[in-house]
Length: 447
Image (tube, rainbow, N blue to C red; front, side, top):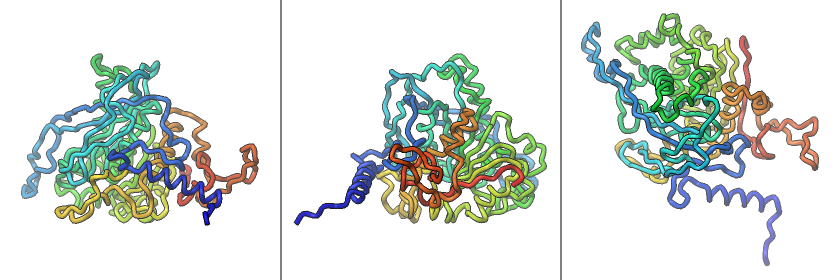
């Protein structure tokens, strides 16, 4: 006897099959451009082809935090060096652009070289735009590298942004050094890359000459990149954090302390908004209400509700609640941990136990509950809406952000022609039955 499956079950089986076929390891390729059948509307790639190039930047005469002599009680002579920063630059490419779509990088183990595949074409010719394009800086976690959020970088470039993702020296899989270097250098690296792209943009031999609008910049940071982005948004750290011998013994963190002359210069007027994925620090008393009062750019926070690295109630959610002088939103992946939305899908080569690290390398990228490609698509959707609203001034994007707080409470109510009924409250941009397990909450200034 042949069993006939109900139509709804058949549809679900089809979606499941397609999802399996689009996994990161399909045909031996580590795809970063997966668009699942249940991807929300704004996750889709934009109208532009995408190019990618690597820039080797050097920030001269920086404090060599890793080699500070902590036995010197007055730190009267801090070592200096020229700090190298490799930056991956995604940009809209010309219609007839060509180039390899295979990019080479390293796994979390810092040793295994892998290939990732997306839509970006290596060294492709840029699109000729009549106006300079908004600029986005991406800052990875500790450890990480410039490809960790590559799914987001090339997706945004297809929508008309120039995106610079930084390899933070001393924080990458290959250059992993003292954590104190990350604490000091994250905001400095982010600011330097903004300055350097602005400088290059004015030079005639830069391939994007006059093509980047650095006066219209966003910072996207994940984990320790989020820590740096929060500081760049204006939030001064506490005296306790600045003076903690467990943080940076030299007292260098005082440059970010609330009320200091140096921190008072932030946020840079060129930075119009910040998106912080799982920003680290609030759960370690790095900020308090007074320091967070100095944030005055719109902010989108993204978190997993069971984040055991940056914390949720005492971490990311507390940051969101206490940034009271700006409008801000919080996107929560229910039951997701620290990898909510940001890391690319785990490369096929990462599925092995590394004795030296003491864990399966794939867990650096994955979540126990959510599929990475699903989280990535949701992140692409909300990032597109947020940057569309705050960098491109597209008023239509607000409708994608004006939502009932819990996606599970949204009601699908459309007539046979697809027109919304008055009782329709389902999240805009999500197909029926796909907006589940999420929260999106707003707070206005002074709330």
